[in-house]
Image 1 (cartoon, rainbow, N blue to C red):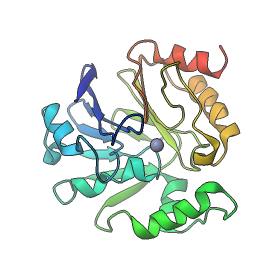
Image 2 (tube, rainbow, N blue to C red):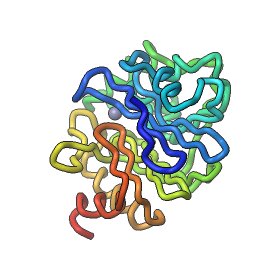
Image 3 (cartoon, protein in one colour):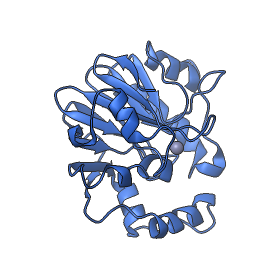
Length: 229
Ligand SMILES: [Zn+2]
């Protein structure tokens, strides 16, 4: 079921089965932006969640990807060919999925990402654009937040909504750190969260890739998580 988090900001719950759920978000500020897309197969589906919010795939103008992991990028295959707008992804993760950069074999995600880019590549017809720290994309600002993935990027909308992917996870007992097995550098995760808090304007909505989004004082919740800074 699609849930309105703030004016023009929708939470699309495209999970498989809880707790293995994944979030996508839609922001309509005159331009319709989808942030992350879930797996290639979800229940409910991305299309039905879009419909629940009152949109069709054709309405989506652009996609922002927080990082190149299949539970965030897989749903792109459900959008094409009706969607033909630009797809934004952190520069280091573009290098990861195109094979211009090889993850170390010794890392738990080294094998996973090598396999993923061969078995589930992004469509060659997609207009994938590299995002650098500080880039402006419409009313979003991109913040490079490495740790979970080398090119992991958070997007903060001017209305006060932060889309932070797997920088943190939501849980019944509050925000948690993504597990080491699923992250390139766990130590970098909190450093990236601190860096984001230091540079981004205040935000009410904290929208994570997993777990229920926070709709009020999201920046304070993230501040508490990193240690009450
Ligand atoms: Zn994820």
